[in-house]
Length: 226
Image 1: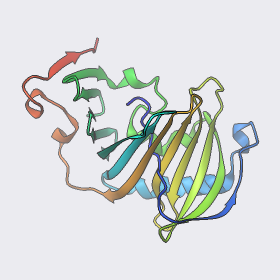
Image 2: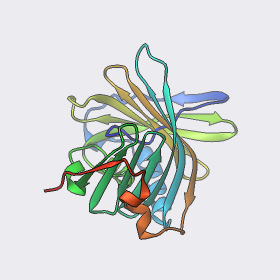
Image 3: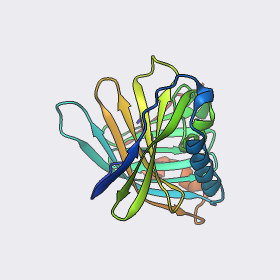
Image 4: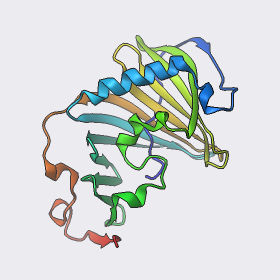
């Protein structure tokens, strides 16, 4: 789950229009066309009271069959609730509950304990392009099931990252993320299809907290805060 970054599994009819490869090496050279698109998306999502996303999460490891899960995520400011078939992650902005359903265990951490991750919360997905960690550029534009999908590639400045590229996909008409794809150096690929992104105003504080009353009686809670 630490590798979870929104990504897109493109399906249906593809019509390729043009493509560009990132061949520069300095952050200051990032594509201004791509930045304008990203700024529009961020402005659009910042106007939402809450962001609710229904998605498919697909992990592909070389020489293995893809593993797919369905998920739902609610993000309100620094708070979020993410639910997958096998995992749940919840945060009220200060505390993070990571629920591994397979082993019936919940690990509790302070939010800052996740800051060593590339994306420590879903809200970071709106801001990470503004940091100096990536060079980015327009890559391609496709027509998928009647929608124009714009693709932007991000290359990490740090060559020691486990991945070498993030490909973000955008619904051009709606100015909303359609997903992204994470490319790992070992051949692993992580993809997420954003099936629906909506403005959500119906939520409560309890949506972002996981308590023993929310899970089966046999689930163990382990508090790792100090």
